[in-house]
Amino acid sequence: MTTHMTPNNFNWQTARVAITGGTGFLGSYVVDGLRARGAGAIHPLSSRDYDLVQPGAASRMLAELKPTLVIHLAARVGGILANQKNPGRFFYENLMMGTQLIEAARVQKLPKLVALGTICAYPKFAPVPFREDEIWNGYPEETNAPYGLAKKMMLVQSQAYREQYGLNSCVLFPVNLYGARDNFDLESSHVIPALIRKCIEAQARGDASIPVWGDGSASREFLHARDAAEGILLACERYDSSDPVNLGAGFEITIRDLAELIRRLTGYQGTLQWDASRPNGQPRRMLDVQRAAERFGFLARVGFEEGLRETIEWYRAQGAQRSHA
Image 1 (tube, rainbow, N blue to C red):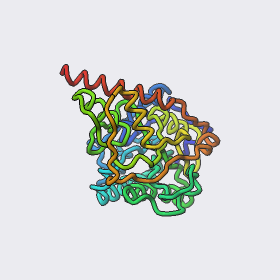
Image 2 (image 1 turned 180 degrees about the vertical axis):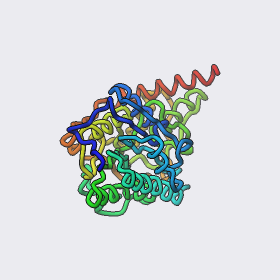
Image 3 (image 1 turned 90 degrees about the horizontal axis):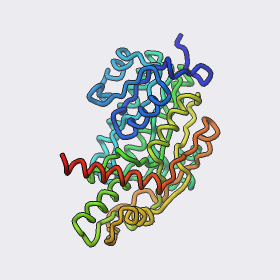
């Protein structure tokens, strides 16, 4: 019989932690947090180490690394454009990663699994702020529904496996993340890195305007990746339930206001050209963050403007490094 990692017996010093997607954007912050906590053995993994889409890869990972805790961050993910181009791929690969990992965790009696879902799992017209109890009350927004539903299946499996097999797992649902080290590729990035890059490059070229998708009316909530990592690690330490939990900062901002804020913070003097023929995505997004505070004491701490300034400075520094390479 395996020993559960519960809040009563959790010990970072003796933990052996495998982080799927651990070499990625959010993974880098989780690894920072694990090191700060003195975790005993940390294994940041990428698909080059174990391609979790492939049958047997998750079982092999658990057998070879023998972790006491798996933090599942791996995902095939991108912004609206990437979701539109890859609905089938995003559905299949995310579903296979989660399903096979949770099954392998059951078979090999993993003491604890903490997995990351997505805000894209929520219904398109969920009442704002999104409460965890609303997660099944409607179909997700169409442009990212395949991705959102694939990730939401982990919640079903986590709850079913806890009930039938006693598997100690949970699924957290974060809002849009941002921060230094993000993906700034315009083909696959999310809105904040895309706007930062567009403004800085337009500024360098002297462009009079930049294109922005949609009409700016949609709202979003953003959580700094450093805060998200802290929320994940608090859940590892203190949370022992398969009830879904939101991870967010508890505010919303329209895309129009966001774009103007990034324009101001980057110092770009040109105008924003809104392309209303492009999709807005989900009309509004903001999470109710009360459950995370109550269940494991998580509250976001990075101020939004502070986090944006830090992200902009990081991207400028990367540009300077590239030009001197």
